[in-house]
Length: 601
Image (cartoon, rainbow, N blue to C red; front, side, top):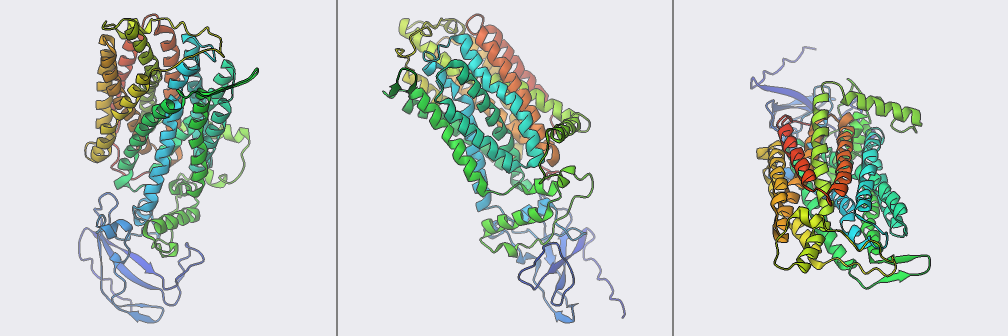
């Protein structure tokens, strides 16, 4: 038979790929592309200069013979639309198969649209991040409320605040490796359930050292949730929306900072306690138990969500990833999952992760430690060594400053209240107020009447409210200015604010600077997580986040220990130290790569 002449390409910069439209309504296997009667092929042209994953194409109108049948004017390329297409956001989106017949991740996730599923995913990941904010800062209100029952002085408070940080140092690394080998979802569920169960058990503890041990395990669990929720969210997003969605997470952290003092204000002042010869349960115990419940509920809710399709593709689980894409498509568009246009996915063949053969098998400790070693070794070698060092160094300086000062702010507010009650109208400084001895620690634990002034709760709410403007501005402008720009500004200005604490003379000035400090540093922490998602490939992403979190929690641990000992003696030293950390982090941020413009590796 005489060969048909190939039609000349209408544009020099345009390529053609085959789009197979199957007449069968259902396929037993999405990967089969066998020729069958009724299968017709049309030709789709698209612009090779696509921007942010959007494909612009036109369908040629011509007659093709498929399996002995003749059809004209076959279904045009714009038949397949996402939910965003229908709303006008992706009006030019076209279906683009790769030359080998499979769709890559960016194309597959873009075709699913951006709708109901992504909003639900942002909600649960945001609530998880909000829950971690509560878990990290809960001791801010437990310290003054439980100091008499647990007989704590300033040194003991320093150890108690350092205990969860030590758990975070150890937990970040372990959870990160598990998430990169066993999956994001299952590990995230495990961290949430563990945090909730341990938190509830800790509310019944009667002794300081036992309570300290439970808070260690709380830190061990909560750091896993904090480090995994960002990569988990980011790996469901198309390039156009990824950075913006990740930046909206900061708003949930802000809500957590606001909600925590409101819960404490509602529960701790209540006239409620149960006391017996061997057991007591007071309002601060109830407060600890209530703050642990969201972790349990979020862990159970997460069972309704799928595993990261990017992770599944990395492991060679193309069929499972395709099922996830179909489900997302159905959730976003309301259509039947089988109508999802993509029928097969591009499988990774080069440098394929060895996890694909071990993903569903149980691992002994020897294999697990070997995988930890391999992942860590990869991060510590080019081309990822530079980014790893920058991420770890910035996390160390920023986290040590943020968590140390935020945990101690309510304590400083309390001491300002005490000073101004005894010396009305007089001015003082943070260092003088911090040096005031706390004489209420050696009191009968059952007869202690330790109350927190309402202004302390209110001040903490003000600090949270101060974060709202930045939480709104960041996702609206991050795509134009970049996460790197906002990170540099937040670090440099927060360093200057830290220096300003030395010159504070009253509680009002302390409150204003505390609000600005919280708004900028919490913004910086969220931005670091956003940047890490783009800086590393899928097989190293969570491990890189975990390694940087480990360094950050190590900095927080050191900061809390130093602050606990020096705040009553020479507070100028930690102030200067933390300010220097923040300025150094701002300088190192200049060296970070620009993110948010490329598809995930």
